Image (tube, rainbow, N blue to C red; front, side, top):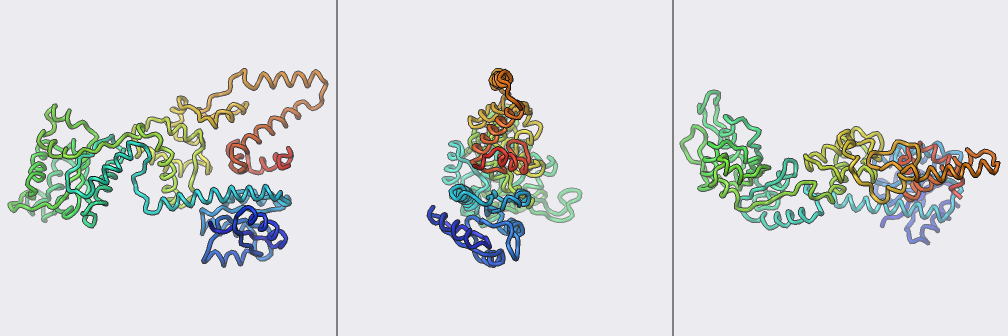
Length: 486
């Protein structure tokens, strides 16, 4: 593990915090100013950066902003005196992990830094897993079967028929088969036979000679020639016109074809992988697909599961797509709340993985905060959220919150849940002649809700504020007023 960097112009802070971290088994490197840190970052980086907010020669906020540009995954904790709290809280808008108020409790400081280390290590592991990460992701049993099949089929030249619903990733499987095959150095050429007009498809596949038809002013190579030495992927093969199926069968049978208007046979050194979302057996029975071509294509069939059949992969895919969208757009990676993830995990996704990818890209652009809640989801998913069950960890939190607009995925608390005990408590205080009953109950309510939120987020105040729907300054002030720092 890389060391924790502690930046403070106060030598006593550096010494005391450094010793406490070393006692906790965490390596430490201390700096007295931001200039030395900036110089060190040119050749090294910490696991976590802990910096004072005000120092001679440069502020912690400036350092934070620079670090977010150059090391966006690095957790930064800002140390600040109470008088600087507004500045520190505003630093969260620049991506600070958390702040530490001076004077701080040493044990709490070490605990906070350890949480930042744990998150940093998780992110580091995720980043390492993303290096050369395959486009195909999945831990579900059905996807593991697909991965094993790809491993067995890649070295061979056998024709493969990939079946599965639209958007399930059939082309990604075809690319994986090519990438791990002896033909990987050759081209991968894909054509969607359903997207090409019937009168142009023959020329697209096999090419044409000059003068073969009106407008054919020059000879043109077709997709079979373009894929020479590599792989030709025929997507939506079930929609191929019947008359062209005969020509494709001939190529698969003897490996030769003719350009449109041509008289010389051309040898095709191409591996063919086909895919369809249709039931080819039914199309054969209906007379819309040649039975002999079906058997020629159906040497090895590989079925891709629909996303609803592998719901346990949704969290993994969401993380992957959100990270990729953030990199493409140059923004911070967003995260889904437990309730929002529950909605996605119970949504039918008729468009499968492609639809989920589009949702993640939409959220990266449209969701207002870094944490995406149910209310931030696209309208069609929010409508479906009524039927989504609530994760166990989220249910107590929902039940404790009165008089707020709950996400549709979270059932509203029963009328006999918290209101009746609250009413009884109010009546007893009023009968006893207690002053400021409203203030007493309000403080108790706020303390209970904020403590629950901090427990839920493992002490991360900025996340707790976001989950409660209040401002960063508000939660900081409430924590101070209610004595929750004690």
